[in-house]
Image (cartoon, rainbow, N blue to C red; front, side, top):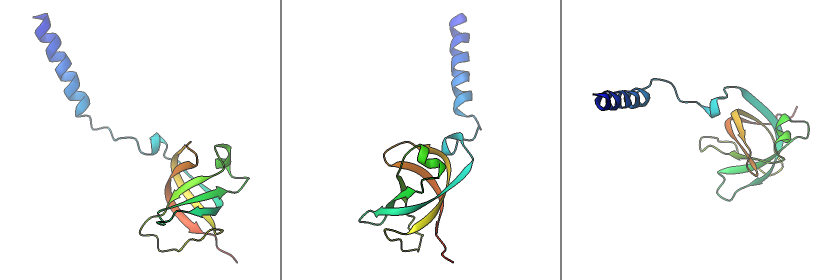
Length: 112
C-alpha cells in the first residue's frame, strides 16, 4: 500500500510541476530597462552585429569595455564605424567578452 501511495504522490508532483501556469522568467528575471551611450568600433561582415564601446562614465563599463549589439533585420538605419548611438536594453548583462545584452532599442545619436 505504501508503495502505491508513494508512486501516486511522485506522479502527482511531476504532473503538477510540469503543468504549472507560472510565466517563465524573461531577461533572467530582471525587468528593469537600462541604457548607455557609446561609439561603434566594429561591424561584422554580414552586418548582423556591431561592437560598441560605451562611454567611460556609463554604468555598464563596470562589467566590461565592449558590448556586442545585434542589428535587427527590420532596423533600416545604416550604421558605420565611429557612429555614436544610444542603446536601450533590458535584463542582466551577460558577462562575456565582449559583453552581451538583450537590446530593446538602438537610436543613432542626434546631433543638434
